[in-house]
Length: 373
Image (cartoon, rainbow, N blue to C red; front, side):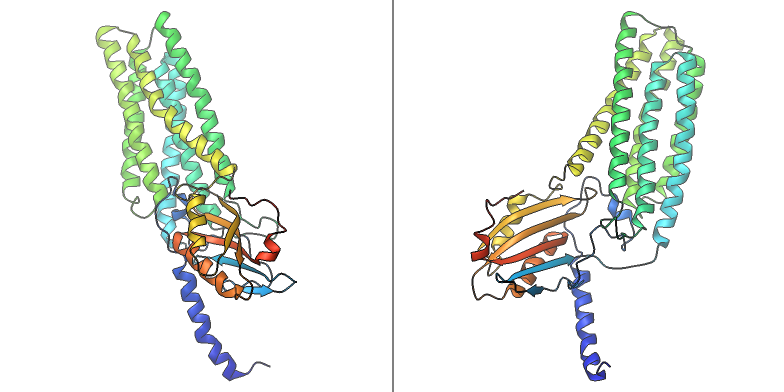
């Protein structure tokens, strides 16, 4: 039976640990793909700490002849209220429906009228529809906890979807560019009237989408990103309208080709950037804003650290940084104190989850070449 006095003493410590746990979640800087901010705070990306590890980032150690000390730092607070994400989620779903409808309208219109500009704008809409799907999936996945098998959760699903989206849009956009250049030598007669009708529908849909997203963009980074994409879509619709007007007024069929190339110039860089970002995450490269050499230097400044090796930095979704590292401490130094100091330094740097092994110099000599990845 627990001693009541002992339990009373433990409560303040638990509260203090929880406060430190919450303060550890502060992050500096923003990622290029900051979708994680739209997820609820209880979204868990990191694996559960092994038995014996404390959730607040406290040290636990065991002595097996070379004084290993392993620490797991979890810098996030817990909240179970999903209300803030409901309105942005509804906005994204509405805009997704509008965008998907316009995509099919422009695709069919482009095939019927022969307008490669409409086809290019349809691919632009497809890219944004896929981006909206990724944003919606990010919100739903953020509400799912890790499981015994999926210990890191399901946030990589978002990255895989982004990669498929980028590769698809790149391939179709490349085909549109090739088709446009072929039409420079062999012009195709365009049905400018129906082309402009479809373009007007697309422009109106983009205006409605922008109005819906503008009301919620302060509450979600996902919605902010979608809002910017819709603004870019407006440029595509305007380009198609201008091309249709030129064809009607002058009969100059090349206006359609020029409009298609302008839209492709808007789509291709974004699709390429998205593909490279997804590949960097899947290859487990250090996330943007986290240079391994800087983190190595930061840990070497921790009092009691003789050496740093086997440093690895990666991310599950390109927004939150994770780390694992071995720290070498001198004989006679308390490994738990060094562990806590190292965890605090990493949390202050914005690394929310870190697995740290503290070891004596005598053991480090047997580990082979040192790696900083």
